[in-house]
Length: 335
Image 1: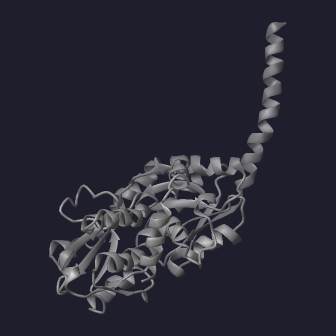
Image 2: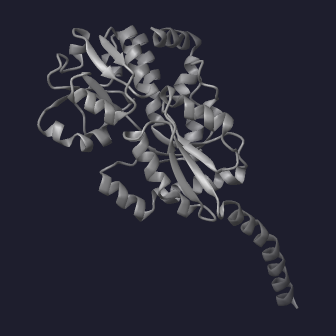
Image 3: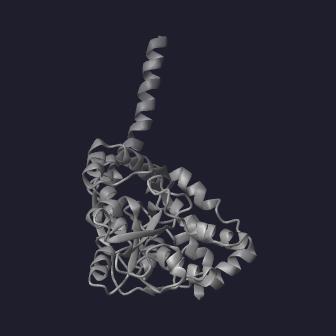
């Protein structure tokens, strides 16, 4: 009799559990998930977006089709606004936007119509410290040279444009910022044509995409933008290292903070909690997938993953900046 009761209880639990599982499977089954990339084709955002978009679908219930589409504009603010205000809030729209999203919010960028803390952060693929590098014939061959000679820099992302603007305003560098090129590929061609002197890229991409330039010393590595030095670049200074006072250093630390977000996947706000959990679980499973890891090795990329839960905590807890610092940062970013 006890056994019969246990069997009956098990059957009841199964009857209750099965519809929920079926419902979960049914939501994504046959659906398409659009992955919005806030940059033009080519470069780090595009490479890492397509990497995760090619694999995460297999790890979501119902195995939906993932379609990656580029939505460049305003340093990825166009894509950020789309995900926040326009895209469906049901798990069928995710994407990757510029790592300076939260910094733009702190600075009060008027074009940004979103609150970075209210997005659902799905997971980080790579923390990012970009490297600013110059063509070998440019007068600026070291970071210190940038205080003496003009350096024409192509910038296609919000983070890099902010960095160079603030360095000019606060530290006194002589950067001339050019924003007309649509992506890293066009910027590299422009540098070869000597239309610009310099640009920045994540070190993980630069060391592979520009391996021949590095080997033949066609470029000089000037500085790193991240909060932490890359272990492979111990002699390349950070922006923070160029600060002359404690107040300037604190300001440069604020502008280095986007490296924590790096190349991260984000979803709109107000998603059902179970959908957020599915996306985060699928993301972490994809990051460990041998097929994705094989693509990483083939493309000579790097991974530095962070779970969506931890990323959400980092972004939510990063807002306690003194008002005086924010005011100074806003003034510096406008110069």
